[in-house]
Image (cartoon, rainbow, N blue to C red; front, side, top):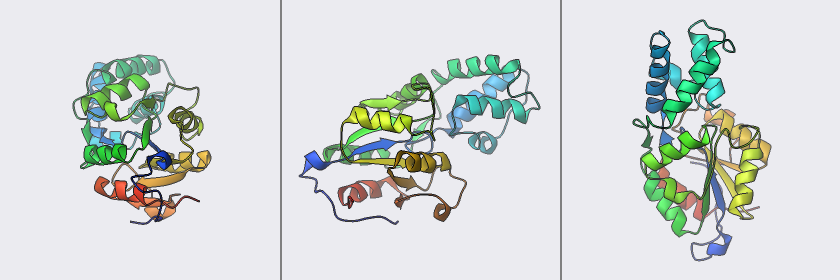
Length: 233
């Protein structure tokens, strides 16, 4: 683990930061759920199933990207006549077929500790808002996040910084950290001018030392201590 030390104590709650989290690959392992939904959509169109690793590699850039990858993988025009059908079917299933979404180990306990420190917490995800809320409710995390922005909440998606900036504005803290797992998240934090905490056990493909980050953590029980002792510039 790398990072910075010394910062506001748990008692000084007024100085606790806003923490903006990515969702898929950061708070929850959603790849099995996305895999199941994707294969159900493909089966409805007569296409064979894809492997979990294939579908996982498509995750992180929003539903339009996922749909285009699914179609392209089967030799179809990613922007052709099937796009709208596959997109709409996937969105419909996304909101109700939530089995397979599971929290990473220690996430709930870490969020409880961060809330006790006084942190204001939000989610900024490229997953559409209603499926994101359905996944958060399914795993019992919605109570931690008064602010949730999805890939259809604004005209742009990550790595454009607008979603993170809007979440930070709504959370209303001067100090903000962004927490995610992927190349898209690292680029988003850089574009937003925020320090990035990289969860190393998500869907990242690039070596850690090649990604923009200010700290890394492998287990969520490390995160509260990182936040509590963060050295603000």
